[in-house]
Length: 307
Image 1 (tube, helix red, strand yellow):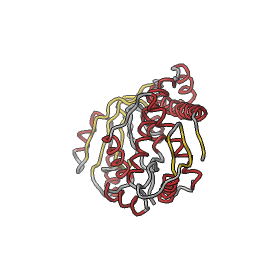
Image 2: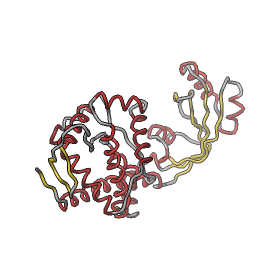
Image 3: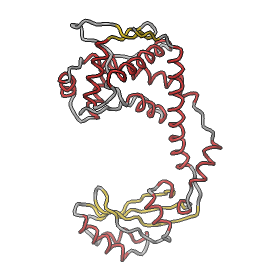
Image 4: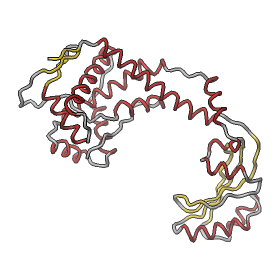
């Protein structure tokens, strides 16, 4: 079953969200097979949507596992026509290179080659041009979002401060200077045993390197200053219970077994990182709502004629 891919087309966090939201169901159809007779079923702002386009969309829905059927296919094609119409009004154009890159990104996201993706579409009876037309609509709508919607999404710092303060936990009120002691290599049970042995002998950051010399493939890494809000919850909670000179329990990581040693610790409230996450979450939620409202308004203003 073919699943939809996401094409990242914007650099801002809100723009990245908009790209993902808009292109989440991008494998859709907007061109007809030239050898087949066509009948116009709907006209949107002067743009015709044919029965062949709708039939192709239904086939693509089947390939995706989308149960939308003929009605869902028709509605999505109408939405695309509205989106392209608004992009044209705003002077937003899409190059063939952008479409090529989007097609490649879809293939990557579903872990197949471009050639295999083409074969999957052909085996489903889907014309390649239909996907390219759908990508053009998705990329154009992302441009509309960036140009006309994102600038209107505002979040006040006061609001973020209040939200961040309400989320701050007691264990997150510390600032640290840390060292990581890493036992490099596979075989987590053996490495964990050595790490626990090291931990039992650990007496502070000043002797961390010297102590590591008695072990095979043990490295001491200066992590530097970190606030508790920058760290995963479990680690932040464990560090909060340690004093200067303490060391965390061994944790298996990708390249071995890791522990964190507390070289300095101070009481410090820092909302920066919580606010950063909240800014993205709140901005994404508001952008999603604004995009929906904008599209609803365009649909109300559109001239849609069903035949």
